[in-house]
Each structure stands twice: as structure tokens, then as C-alpha cells.
Image 1 (spheres, each protein chain N blue to C red):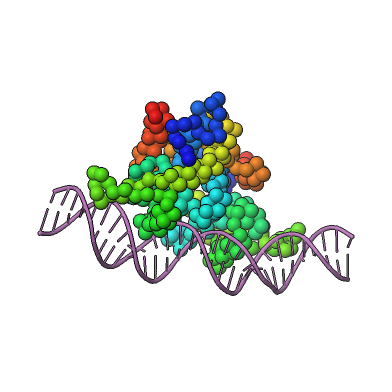
Image 2 (image 1 turned 30 degrees about the horizontal axis):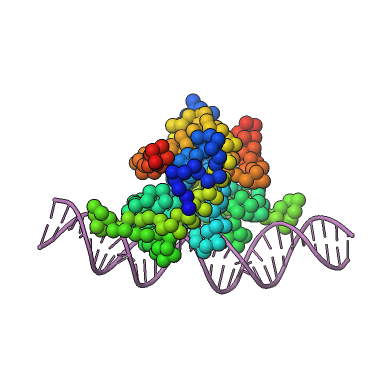
Length: 177
Length: 177
DNA sequence: AGAATAGGTCAATATGGTTGACGCATCCGC
DNA sequence: GCGGATGCGTCAACCATATTGACCTATTCT
């Protein structure tokens, strides 16, 4: 049983203060509330279209990596293909997402947004961006670096290349294109 | 439609670099993956007990604010009472959570963990703490401050007192008790 | 040729959320 | 003290999103 007045389990007496239980709990709670409020930003738009958060996640990553294969999207979302297939079928039947047979590997189905899909994703992104930009601006540039650093540390090392790849592409786009 | 090569919508030419689209998208993605991986830490324990994440959230906040009323928990979780009642009924039937009639207001049901509930919450907390502490340690103390600052900025101002109250209590406990 | 891979689909099930409508006990203001 | 408001519980129907397991086709790799 955990006694809140005792040193946290697994931390030695020499642990820095910022690794003690109140600081850990604060991180857990802020991450929970921060994440929750970030995604709430797009809910009204989704609801007006009869879509859910699962559709949003798919739209987001397809927008982020146009031409990605279904298997890539499955790795990003970490769900089963049966679960994704329903979402993807919805999005395609509404003309928001298009498929194209892979060039190198004709078994692949490369996903991209249609014009209507890009428009919707833009609306959804704006809603989320508004909140994130406000949080960034309130906290300041240096805080943003710390925000990223802690979150990267939460991602299992083997998954980091996948996440960093998203970023690498967008920076190339914005710098060069 | 959103053109990734144009300045982001809603940002003026004078916006700081850290508010531009790639930086915003990086924040969205790291928050998504960071949150996801944090909560995954407890899933194995929950599954072995036949509980879900909703039970975990309830246990967490009851552990954090022993004696809180059902309405307080509803505000923290931001779900309907019908949804919470199923979870709470589960936890009480398993002897993990106990209710006590409110002292000042006898309509209230004040929630607390039983000994078994506290033991389970301790196990779950340890699983999550392990990941959070590792992320903190990798990023460093200064980064943790930035992490908190951005996340606080994501929480609507009217909800911040609720979140800060959680923290205030635990710091009092650790400092004085 | 045969195994492995990418993708799709059918079916059953679980979790956790919603709205809406009630009922009961208790508290508060007049 | 009465009446409305509040705190909590509950029944019912429904919805969104996830799961496991089985099986299929097309394509690629060895």
C-alpha cells in the first residue's frame, strides 16, 4: 500500500525534488486535463458533421503524411485494422479520403485527403491550433521546449522514430516548399 | 483549404517562430502520443483485474481527494452521472471504494478508497509514475516547469482552480504530514 | 511454387460514453 | 412548514469505438 507521507516507492533518498510524488501527480493530472481540453476543441465541428474523434485522428495523420499506407496509419493509431476499416470506410464514402494503389508495391493502398477532406481537416486543425497556440504563447518559447522534451521522454524509444518522422517531413515542407 | 506552404491561418507575419504550424503540430502529436503512452502503463494491471480505464480515472481522483463528493468527481471527470454510476457501482461492489454520508450535507455521498482500493491505486500509480519519472529525469527539472506551463495554458481558465486545488492538497500533505 | 505480406470483411463482444425520464432524501429560502 | 432546488441513484435505449478470431484476395518475395 502506498503511504503518501513516505518517500515514493522506487525513488531513493537522493532523488531530486522534482521526481517526488506531488510533482509526478501534477504531471499526470495536467497531461490528462491538457490532452482532454486540446481535443475538445474540435468536437463541435465533428459533431456538426456526424463524425467522431476516431475520424479526426485518421484525418489528421493522413493530412500530415499524404500518401501513407494503411499499415502506416495503423501503426500511428495503434488500433486494429478492423477498427480502422470502419472509420476509413466512412471517410471514403463521404469523399473526404481517397485511396491510390501503391506504385512500388501494388498491394498497398496509399491514403490521401480529397479537397473536401483537406478543407475539413483545416477547420479541425484551426480549432486545435487556437488552443495550442494560446498555451504556447502564455508559457513562452522556452517552456515549449521543455513541454516537448518531457513528452518525448514518455514515448517508448522504439516509437520515437515514427513520431520524429512526422516532424521531419513538416519542417522540410515549411523550410523548403 | 489549408496550404501548408502558406503562413498558417490566423497567424500574422509577426508571429514568433514557435507559434508556426510545424511547432503547433509537433505539440499536438507529442501530446497525443505522450498521453497515450502514459495511460498505457497501467493497462496490464487493470486487465488482470477486469477493470478499465474509466475505473482507473475514478480510483485516481478518489485517492487524490479522499472524501470528495460524487458531484466533485463528476466535475473532474466531465462525464454524466449515469456513466459514472456504473463505474462507481463496480468499484463499490468489489470493495475498492466506500461511501460515507456527508457530515455538513447529508445528501452527499463522500467517496474514499478502502484498504484494498488504496493498494490497487498504489499499484496503478506506480506503473504510471515509472514512466512519468523517467520522462522527467530525461528532460530535466527546467523542462518539467515548461511542461507544466504549457499544459496549464491548455486548460480553460475557469477550470484551473479545480486542477490547482488537487495540487494544493498534495503539497500540503507532503510538506506538513 | 509456396510462404509471407497488405489489405478487406464478417461476426460477436466489450467498454464507456450519451440522452431522457423518474424517484427519493435533504437542504434552503420564504 | 411548505415548496423549490439540489445531490444522488436508477431504468432504458442507444451510440462510438475498441477488441478477438476467422477467412478471403491480391501481390510480393524467396
